[in-house]
Length: 164
Length: 186
Image (cartoon, rainbow over all chains, first blue to last red; front, side):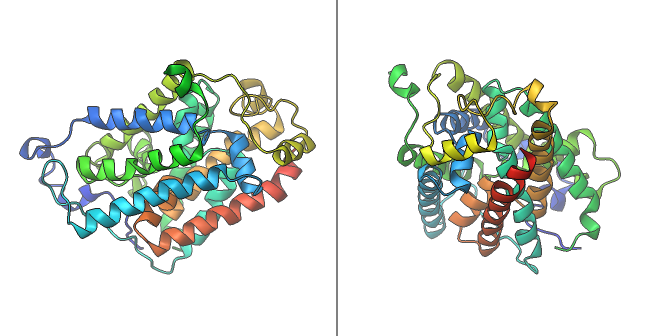
């Protein structure tokens, strides 16, 4: 079985884990909440959470989603390049390490990607927008979220038998 | 000010603003931007069962991310209340024509209400799109090791080849669902 990038880092240091929060300075959860609120507002106002916009994208009938993804990618790529080049540290002085994704046979990325894409077009929302839509009062998205959790669980259950 | 912010934000503003989440999370705690990991954390927190994949300390590795998506829900609520815009989404005329051709009559709001509502859930198209689509999003994102945020934004930003393969897969799947499955479902 292939262990991959998404294995949480916690697994390598289980023994020393329980008091970890007291050993080094870490950002409070509050700041992640603020960043999430920011992301939720931008996702909503950009209309990236709209089923209609996702349809327009997959039908290649508008630039909106492509321009947005390209703009996000440009800023993110430039930031990551600078962070790596300068060996920047977090605001608490810790090293920033971005683990490379394991290629393996690459099967999981192609097939998993296609399965995800099918769901993305049907639901008109990827995981971030599912949460943002719930905030927007589209409460039936709780059902989509529950179904996505079940889908994740089924993947976890079948994982040892699936080709990666 | 609020009136101005309530207008739809153009892609050339919103795109870079989304991109900023990547360095913000790295500078804050060295964290990787990726929303779908939370679906795994939710499994680990609620129904890990006998599955090895869900046996890890989700609080230690995922509490920051679960807090982040709680923020996304709140952010959606703030945008929906303080910055609400009642106008229909300005999708292209061609898309409107295609969706009308599928049989959708109400193109107002963020999502087609005849499908994405409690009454819509009880129809065949609604059930397939919400429950089927949700399942595939959850299964596929974990199989692929990430979703739009993890692969199309963070992964590609770090020039990772696996992420490029995944994103090509996203679009192959999306095109199949749009042009083959949707006409069958509606």
